[in-house]
Image: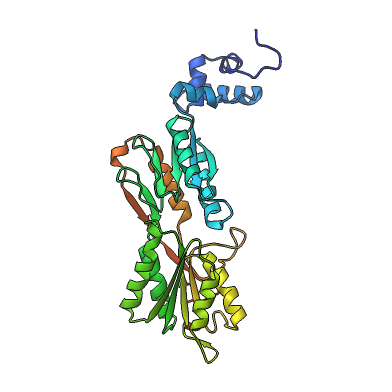
Length: 337
């Protein structure tokens, strides 16, 4: 006899619907049954407020239906949007996301990998910064922006094309002398290709350029020093700047404002990432937009793919350009490009 106030079981649903237990199981797991049986089971589920015991299901299938996402933090808008989109992609497949904010801590990243080894999650999607990260080939793992091994797929935007696109766009908008500003990790990763793409674009358009590259630990004040060194007679030597992230654009605009340089009147700026105000508002600057939803979908699709041997070592997804107020599209009739 069913205990009072205990949660309803599949057997209770079968009795309520007047069908076999196996029929209930088929309906819950999306297997084909007669339409009339399906309707009766679904009505019984609603009436009894029955919920599938995903933990028990996982034990039976030797799965947790949980995927760990390793990202540095949720403070940065790009990381936050990435987490949001990956969660949506997992939910579509009835998987849960375990969010692991590592704060760039190499030890913490390795601990989460150990968790996967202990079968506490079914796989890992990781945007990692540990240069010595060890991931066993047997662990389902998909990396974002960084190739860890030939057996671990890496998903990234086409960073080289994005850098080249930024250079060509500045040239198209009339820039004659440009600067490249970067803060980034010393790790070998896909975003580093933005520099090579930008150089290639400048060379193709005969566009003179200068570079200022800082490591992650460097002070933003070094950008101010660099820009002030390139001030002559109250004017900046550069009429265009490419910043490798939209966050750098934010900091550089404040520096330029302090220096009395107007954006975009005196200098046009393009960033990289595609960050928007309040998530879905206007772009915070003119920018190379990363296809975050497509990156998320590709990560989840490859992670949950059964045959590991058919997974590509690197997938580069196309980027686009978006106007965000820090360039002069309207003067050049390009406002919709």
